[in-house]
Amino acid sequence: MADWAGFPHDLLVLIAKRVKVMEDYIAFGCVCNSWRTASSKDCFDLLSPQLPLLMLPDDDEKTYYREFYSLSKGKVSRKLYLPDAKGRDCFPTHHMGWLLTQSLDGEEVNLFNPFSATKIHLPNQFALRALQSPDDLIEEPEFYRHIKLATLSANPSFTSDYVLVISYDTDVNYLAFWLPGDINWTLFDMDERHGGVCNMTYYKGKFYLLTWGAEIWVVDVQSRDRRVESHLIYLNDNKDLFRHSIQYYLVVVNDALLFVARFGKNRSNDNSAVDTFKCEVYEVDEMKCKLKRIDNLGDSTIFLGLNGATSIDSTKFTGAIMPNHIYFTDDWDEQNLSLECGGGKDTGVYNLEDGNIEYFYPELPLSCICPPTWGCPSPHDLLVLIVKHVKVMEDFIACRGVCASCRTASTKDNFDLFSNAP
Image (tube, rainbow, N blue to C red; front, top):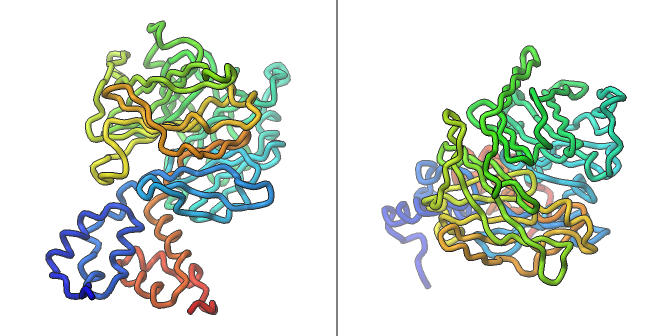
């Protein structure tokens, strides 16, 4: 039988430094004392972004659980009790795991972190419409009246100094923001209207908005005096980037702002459905107000989905994700409304080098309300989540001993001291 505790310390340290997935790092430190000693905080960047998890739709009308698919494990790795996400529209705010959830009747709107089960109540959709003048209230299909985009300036898990910007009634481009402590939304508008906002991101202290006309705006929300300044930095003159069945995204990659166009075509066996067939990536030159085509992302990987995009360094997760690839989930919201089973089928990986598309989860469940989407847990939220699944006292104590961050996450609230686990 192998003597796991007898491995040379230097070898264990080298192995520990190559562990990039948080769950694997915790498991490494729980093997025994010598392994725990080797897996010090210097061997693992506890602030580094973790791989996005694919949040799957409700699998049953009667259950309150949501499953999360792990790219590194190649299987469903988490099943969380999330009653606050049941039967609700959920999409990422693209800041460390936080989702915006809204009930279908518009009565409840929340910021919700599925990994820490934290909820922040927001003014509802009726509060938004009550702020508008009667002349601005256009009778539109229910689909357009919902909040469709939301972006945070900072992570509510660590600070109360953040701004939430939303886009609603998206066909006519209404915008609003909310600050912690506000009773209601604050409406604002850009200098001109160039079609509804289809994507937003927070970059270098400002919000960048992308319209369905492939135009890019910069919005500076001055939280102290609630003043909003906006200006246009790119006016689209590329006719190939302005046609039906294209989704647009803004994403920050290696501190550069990129514009991604995702092209779709009607599904061969169902003209109502749309499938992705190619992606194009451009760097935004804010000084020259131009787009520069990019054919190589280097070691970076982009994730596209509901409400936007994010990126990650693939070298930290060798074997789990591929560099110079774009992972996408089904984001054809309007087209999917006409599908009996809902959206989710158009989920795969696009190779930016050769244009090939692969599908990593063929059995993906579908949904009309909340198709599969990416969730990006913060390292702390992931630690808490891991600790909550520890049921044996010895393992819980071992987990606390891995590092200071693990000890902080391993509070008594995260472990049932009266459980009867063997």
